[in-house]
Length: 218
Image 1 (tube, rainbow, N blue to C red):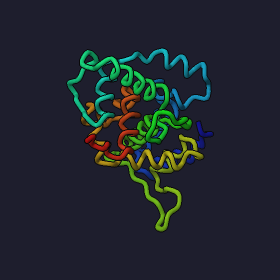
Image 2: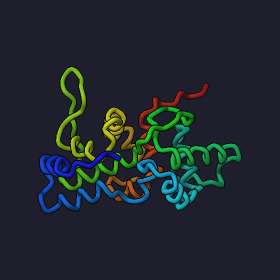
Image 3: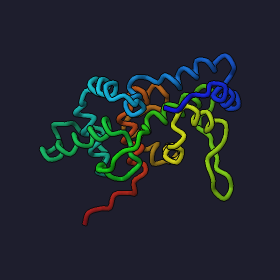
Image 4: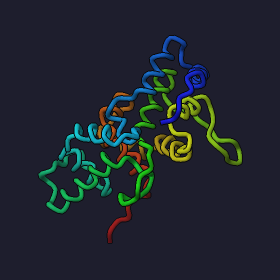
């Protein structure tokens, strides 16, 4: 995690429109996220192991993820409806989503960086909720350059600065219509609490939203 500059974070939240009485609570939410979001955020393997041990395998959710990943979303699919081979692939996808947070790549073989897309989404939603905004706002200078804006500065204060491009890509992906449709298909809500309750599913939704549309087999 980044070394926290509390005055800078407070200033960025003020500029984002967060009322003074809500700032202490918002800082706490951003700097002490729910335990479900600390898997990739932690630098301590023993803590990561303890958190992972609490995440139980959800067979039916894994089945829905698998069908969604295959380009055939089916909210009614269950584990028993999958073939043995499909179950094996669904379980592999689940472990990738839960134990290998979004790598911002199109494959599951890549080595993921230490940034959790669900943690980014959670912090974004906390900032939006505190400021009364429905959409996370950030901008890039004309002609390119690093992202900017009060909300972005608040987000950057609590996340690793050296992952700026990856964070910006997660933010951009979360604003796509495709991501909204995926969340709807998976029954995912928009609140920060929804993200903390379903981090693995949000990681998959972000990863899938970045991929090109699957080619139809002839």
